[in-house]
Image 1 (spheres, one colour):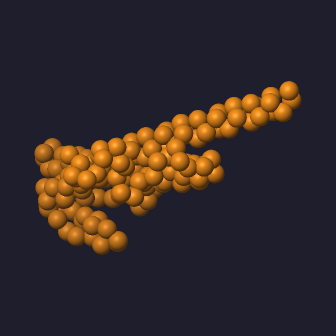
Image 2 (tube, helix red, strand yellow):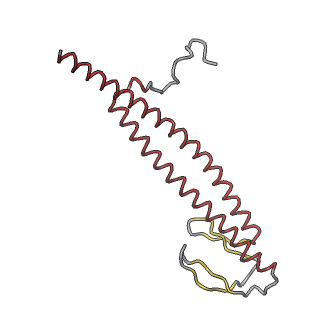
Image 3 (spheres, helix red, strand yellow):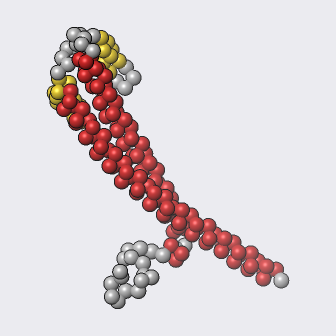
Length: 172
């Protein structure tokens, strides 16, 4: 409900009626929104990639550490150790009880396999929350961009109609 002395049709403070903006102003806002949307979608892709890496860590612990324990192997089976995202070397699993967890910025913490899974699943959930919020922001910005595009199109059509009417009047 609007405050007592405020008409319901008044825009919120700090907002601007897009129909009152000139064509260059609308183009500038449209360019800015496009840039923001590009940045947000890039961030979304990076967050999704990070989330997939954490899910991959959970899968690796489940299959490599816990899975070998369930199979009853001696824990000395060959595994592939990632050096980079595309380079792996053969290695042997020395201890099935503890794993090293990358907690960020080059720091590793030794954890039990269940605690490591708990850590990574927490990261996955946290990123899911961030991704959901980011998707809402992207939808809002996309809607705003469509409004600016529509307003710009209407202004250009109105200017075109006005200039053709002026040209017709001047020719007669």
